[in-house]
Image (cartoon, rainbow, N blue to C red):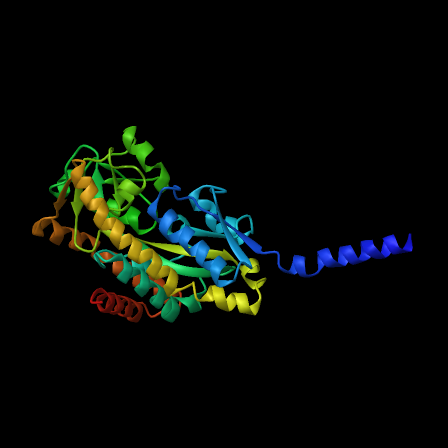
Length: 339
């Protein structure tokens, strides 16, 4: 009996020793983007694989169906319901006032330049304001440039916006729609096809990529583009802070190489490819895309002039030199566009 008891003790020790130490830490990545969306396939899943490889299997990212609605994901990650997620920061009203400056109109047609420049601006100017308090910011990227797409009516002059109900994503997109003279209504991106196909809305403020990305191609018939976009949207990779701190120093170092600009570049380069492909796909499927006339563009610029002034005042309240931050952001974009 004593020998049997000793065997059980040794077996228990073996099971609780090296084998337990080798058990991977699993992160639940709640993904509200459609599983067929290019960012799901070529950014989130790719990044998840990179994390596992970098940590030699000690950390695994399990990309799962969303655990809540898109706007809920900040709290889902902060409270540990999910371990990681991507969030459109404008969905959380008032929380990310500084990032709104990165979303201003006419920034760039090159998403990779905007995304990397956004991360650098966050690191150099915004991080001290701690807008991601209680979370680990894994990386910052941009969604854009946003353009206007409508279901029935082609927009030729700004008068054509009157009476049009345009889907917006919160934050600056709402202000953009109002300044254009249309009526804004909010809907999370995955609901866009439903609201347009059912006649709830007349159009959407979306980057080209998101039209086929969210299966909206058959719902829209017209597009109006301006150089650099009517605006942009900030998108952040966030990680539960406790889960991050539970990593060993070695694994934090390994995963850390896959955060920041690594995420921004992975996201931005995909967006450049898919934006270009989306425009071609829309044209093939009969969507009529027009460039804003010089007169329309001049009027749009005039109506949008107050956005930057208002943001500079908000940045000052946060203790950030807004003028310096925007100058840096724009200079980084121009530098990155040349590469």
